[in-house]
Amino acid sequence: MNAVRKITSLLAGAGLLAAASTSALAQDKTVKVGLLSDFSGVFAQLAKDVEDSWMLALEERGGMVAGYKVEIIKEDSENSPQVGVQKANKLIKSDNVAIFGGVISSGVGIALAGVADKEKTPFVAGFAIADPLTGKFCSPYVARTSFSANALQSAAGAYWAKQGVKTAVFMGPDYAAGQAMLAGFKNGFEAAGGKVVLEELTPFKTTKDWGPSLLKAQQTGADMIYTFYAGSEAVQVVKQHAAFGMQEKMPLRGAMWIYDEALWDAMGGVQMNAIHVTNYTNALDTEASEKFEKAFSDKYGRLPVASNAMGYTNAVAIFDGLAKAIEENGGNLPEDKAKIISALASLKLDNDPRGPVHFNKDNNAMQDNLYMVQIVEGPDGKPTHKVIDTFPYGEDLPGCNMK
Image (cartoon, rainbow, N blue to C red; front, side):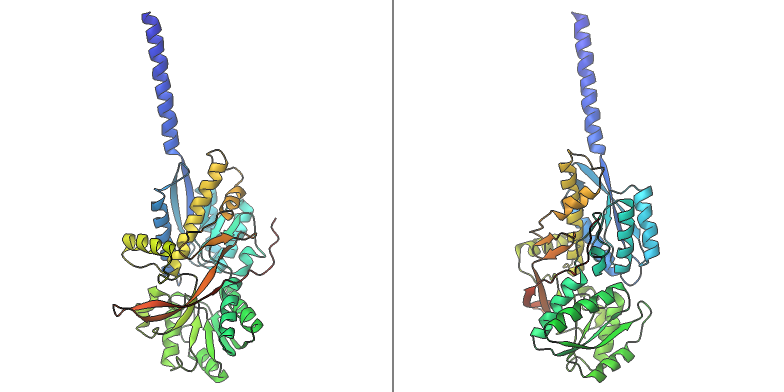
């Protein structure tokens, strides 16, 4: 009888050890996710904005997705396609990430799409807007949570033409994103009856004096300048435009980057009363926006801006897409990583702070509305946004031939 008890005790002990071992293994499951962005250079502030929202989204999920602990591995692309490719290869081949995202630069984004397709590892662009990313270079391993240039800018162009603007000058940096923004704005503006009378593309990252370009714009007599600049370049363009005394006769319009809230202090007040289009503003009074605003403010002590909202969408789509892919694969990461993008692209982000977001057949994010906002003085005497109009989102360009 004693022998039987001993054997039973030993078996029970073995069972407990096995259960403990299984539990430990479950707790030790980790999925690595790459945050590859332009942390140095002209887009450094935007990259930091995206990173902050990634950390918030991860914290909201307790650092876990579908039973896996998430390990974020951060790399700087240095706003260079060549460096971006090197860092992406490191993330894939050395760090063994399951997925990576977050990039700001369109030039870097297009290069990374090629790496993702070749290495069969998912890449989700969080900010890059060049149309070919989900057009010519589309892939079952590539998605975008921001938007295509044509979707945003064709809608903005059509809006301004319908408001009675007849002529416009386009100004922007001469690289992939600037060229895409020009094409998108021109498509919408001219289809709705407007005319782009001057296309002024300036050398990217090297231009410091926009005086010659602004003088050319003045000489056209156009109704407005529509522009795409970001970061330190946006500050310089806005201040030099004001110094030329052009704010009334030839106002400077554009999307959220030209008047990014993070740049307001550097602009010294000349941004007041400016109007621009955005896909998010903390002036929205939706439940989802207010929830995001509170969570972000509680964590960072400041209000979120459009780049924070875009970073948040990027992180939520990556984390929840990963979770869905794992759950659909019996609790394990799928060997075929295209299933991660497939799961991500099937998400309906109805509670996104930007408004409902879904993905089209090219794995490109689409949202219901865009917002026209004006920078006004708030009740506390500080600059804030006022939503002056809401209008429909645009469409992607054709060109995707998914492999």
